[in-house]
Amino acid sequence: MELTYEIKRSAARKKVTITVERDRSVIVHAPANVSEEKLHQIVESRRLWIFEKLHHEQKYQPLPHPPGKELVSGESASYLGRAYRIELVDDDDPRIRFANRFFIPRSHVGRQRQVLRQWYIDRAREKILPRARSHAKSLSVEFQQARIVDNRYRWGSCTAKDNVYFNWRLIKAPMFVIDYVVIHELAHLIEANHTPRFWSIVSAQTANMERARKWLRENGQCLEEDV
Image (cartoon, rainbow, N blue to C red; front, top):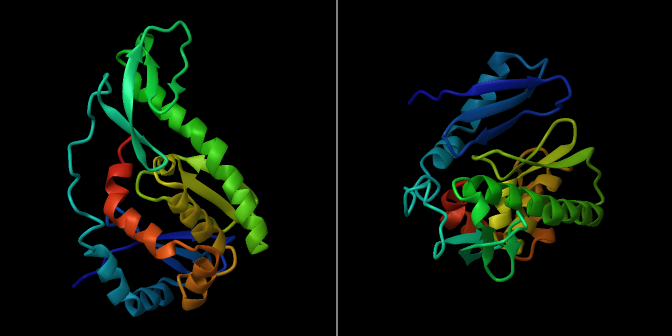
């Protein structure tokens, strides 16, 4: 069976890595000086692993409900692994308040999704980025910068320039899942590929690694919704 993939080169990259995105695209991240023939050999050597990822049943199962639900009183939105009720309220303060439920001012009617999305992004910066700094110390690694980004199909990434990026949608997941994703990306600063050494590093730092991976397999597509 033919295997198609996209090559992304970087002069700063030292090793070849392969990722299978949630949209089923295969990306080969390569140093600038590696020939296409060599990259093809590497891809062929990982063919079985790639096809296992491409045909993962849970990873690509249909969403349990259609995206784009209305954000009205009585609906719910997720935060740190739990679903909380939404209430539209009469309030002069335009900010969303959270106290065991989301209080969204009626002044935002018609754009509740946008303001809740921004609320999530702000909370992700407050909670995820400090975890990255803390776990980096535990792993004795340093990154150039850590940022919250909008990337629907990846929970996190580590670049060739030692930057780590995290999907803001992670803020809807439990903290043990967030910690797993953070440690996973930071471990790539030590080991670029998903080798046995890489997984040994992650498991040593993540008490709930298998539980977190299972949670993402079962709930990942729901997280991909904007709210």
